[in-house]
Length: 458
Ligand code: FPP
Ligand code: ZN
Ligand code: K
Image 1 (cartoon, rainbow, N blue to C red):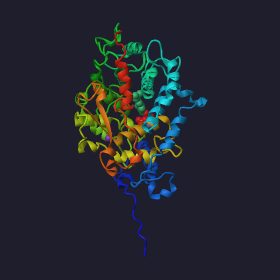
Image 2 (image 1 turned 90 degrees about the vertical axis):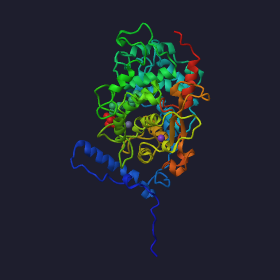
Image 3 (image 1 turned 180 degrees about the horizontal axis):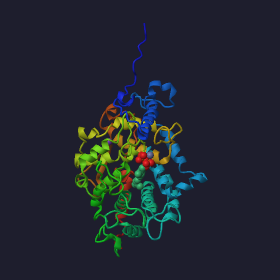
């Protein structure tokens, strides 16, 4: 009797073959897209010939998370680098943040890095406020953001008190511009990265919203950090519906996250997005996810890349928070909240099938090497897929009343059956992250609590 080999994996067809509608016009862009599909398909379908693959597959034909491989890779990324890496010298705070954040998501205790982090960052702080990328470098908002988040991740009084809050506030005051935005460094470019990094720092460190005096001439008539910021960010929404780095530029996922998160740091989700055209934003965000790859691209006619699992993927929980409205802390999420506005399955398949490097770490796409930036942000995206994020009403059971601290995250697999939670295994669930600060909820809350106990009477 002929043996019938059952199809053991149920991979939906749209993740296993090129799109059925094909544009005949060939351009450099369309060739790059075809090449990317060709490069991803063998990884998306590799469960069909599992003996050729270094990974184990689950019942959905998705490779398991190589947790230990990624942990080893990230610890390795905190060791010394060869001379050629001098090019990323100004990104040292980022390299610390990406590694610590990835390790936390994978379930590691990162407090063992506390002393090293303090020792590394201490010489980077400038007496005039803020942190540079290294000793002797000008203070920059991006590096300062990574420093503050890293100190929050390792936690503890000694880490927090390294930060000179008074001079941080004064330095931020010199970065604010009359158009509502922020320079990324004194005399530097004004873009939505600056606005997001500044608001994260102000909120986590409980800095006064009033601009320090003497008020710098370049702020015009503004007197607080928030004034003009909502209008400035609204001007960054483009005719495509996405959000650009600055008014008049091209919409990009990384900037969309910065702008949306910045708006949600300023106001509760129900009103935070009032100045944006939401239907066109949703349409643009949805168009960032591709099939068969399943992952997100950063902008129109560009390629999927694992890091947009966070930059684009991280926009969705914030928009969902807006759409679902505030919950009471003990409410079970509704069925509607357990579904997602994008394809969780597609993103999970892309991250676990295409982004995991054989030797540990995660990457942009199969033809690229793993690095700690892509490892951090693909894992952040996977964590977001695995959790439901929501925003709760102010109520007596909540210690801090400040709205950015009222976001909660619950693992989907605790709320629904494993198979309804998604195409990953329960054992591959990552830690949740705070959707605005991109660090653990309790790390953010503890730094804020400590800051509330410090002086603001400068
Ligand atoms: C385009 O690169 C990328 C950008 C224009 C923005 C990059 C910014 C970030 C990733 C993060 C900024 C956020 C903070 C908090 C500092 P590309 O042309 O190489 O990539 P693409 O083809 O995918 O657009
Ligand atoms: Zn990338
Ligand atoms: K989700």
